[in-house]
Amino acid sequence: MSEYSVIISNISKSYGDVSAVKNISVNIKKGELFGLIGPDGGGKTTLIRILTTLLKTDTGNATVEGFDILKEYKKIRQIIGYMPGRFSLYQDLTVEENLSFFASVFGTTIEKNYALIKDIYSHIEPFKKRKAGDLSGGMKQKLALSCALIHKPKVLFLDEPTTGVDAVSRKEFWEMLKNLQQYQITIIVSTPYMDEAGLCDRVALMQQGKILSIDSPLNISKQFNKTLFSVKTENKFKLLTDLRNYENMNSVNAFGQYIHYTDLSNSNETNKLEEYLKVKNHTVIKIKKINPTIEDCFIELMKQ
Image (cartoon, rainbow, N blue to C red; front, side, top):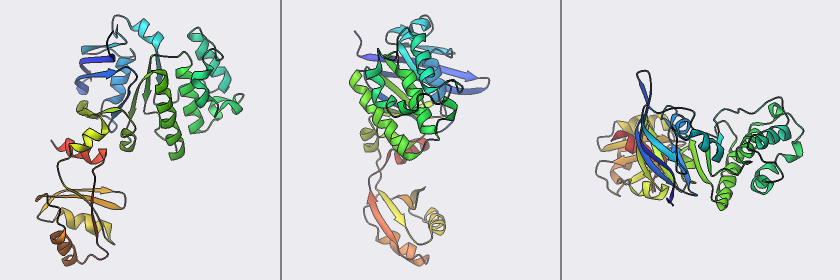
């Protein structure tokens, strides 16, 4: 028996002249929480739709739990759960009616697999008589996940499940995903949020249909080979402009209130930079060496 739940081999897909996915190959282990990380247009949704047998490839192939996505798509649809990016449940049915319907489609019941969804469904069970269309964003998210899980799938596909959801609900959602791993369900989740990458076992960083890197978040962060500094002064816009014009500048990127900066010399010393900023009339100068984030690594990989 293979250790891999999903095996992707040289998959490509185009829409007219636009290449959405370009020659992608990756193996995803059984029980792994695997992230497809990247901006809109990166190819994440297209890849998930191919793996869930909703789209055909132009070239290449893949297997899900040993089943061929082209030849055995009906078998795949019986063993996967899929939560699309847009809420797609029946708005006019209640919470309970939606869940019962999806259970019946797969020949099971809410009672039979209640233990699997209990931690998720318990948040919305007090509102089980409410119509799905009247739920908040976070509650819709939990209902959609419950419906995707009610038949105990072997592989769970989640396409940008936290987009447009508040920060608290996002945190709760990822805690739920980590708890699901105890059931040995392989989870493949796409997200544009770089901070969510660190919550995955492994990630594929995607840009314009290509995979830039595949590894654990920690190992990807270790690949950043420059000394990184966060820089802050009283005038962020002027700081951004002045750093970009600094002769020793290697990279300058805005991160919230701070600027992430690397120097051509790759030195730990900050004296020259601080003197330059003083000459440019900056005050309250704060320069600190920091560890790179996944987002720093992603930006660096995009330049290569």
